Picture 1 (spheres, rainbow, N blue to C red):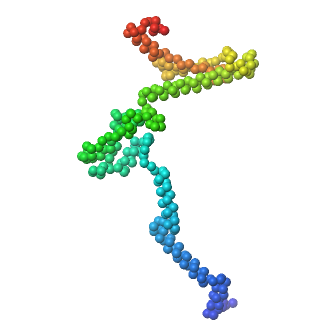
Picture 2: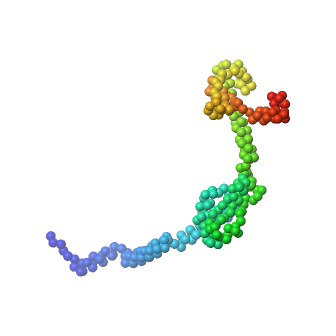
Picture 3: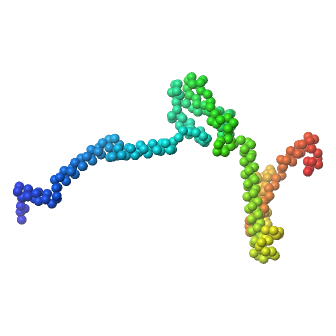
Amino acid sequence: MKGKCFDKESTEALVTSDKGLYFDQDKLLELERETEEENDVASIIASRLKLPVNPKEDLEESESQEFIESQESWQKLNGRTIVSGNSLQEYLEKSVSCRFCHVDATLLENVSAKSGLGSSWIVNCDNDQCPSRNTNSAFNTMPRGKEQSDEGMQPITKNYWTEHSKKIESEGKNLLENELNWAAFDVKECKFALGELQCTREQLSEVVINAGVTLHASWYSRGWSATDAVIVAISVNTGRVVDVVHMSSSCAECKKMLKKQLDGKVSRLEYLS
């Protein structure tokens, strides 16, 4: 069957009938075309400026957020701080130059003037002929006589090192003593559970018992030249260390007294005592 071609009247009738399917189709189509053109123009402008489609609102929000962050996070450097020397030198090379000849500057430190956490610095131009080298003066990173900061940080000097070491030693001895006491009490509880002690549980802390131990020794270093050693007693009932003894073949106090005896400052009896 041959297909029938539409004539002009049939075509116009079909188009008219199709438009009638929508209410105000012409106006809606025209409005859609205008909206699409406006969006296309806004997108082109935003892409050229590298901005979002709605730049005004986003710019105001980002600028206000950056202003708040800059006010809260960044402040003028003040007080004490710990700085990495390598990082400081790296950033100075990138951002600091001499005001006379505009050559890079280097931060120098006077190693002989260090005191605790304080030091003496000077910013030197890398140009040997620069006149600023004659006018620059060193400055102290911390006020003289105030090496101890407000936060209680004390400079690491010989006296403070000895003081801190003694404090650590004292606390270590207390911890060791408490641990050994608990280990000895565990031995008593073990024997009490086996029925070897004729006492009540409340009397365990006061009763004195005989308990088997094994001894193990360890020298400070290998060979016969070692002067310090530690000996531990391990309970055969619980396997815990119940006592630790430090032994030494030399004594600093004895050497001092022997020298005083040889010099005639103390008697033989005083040295032996």
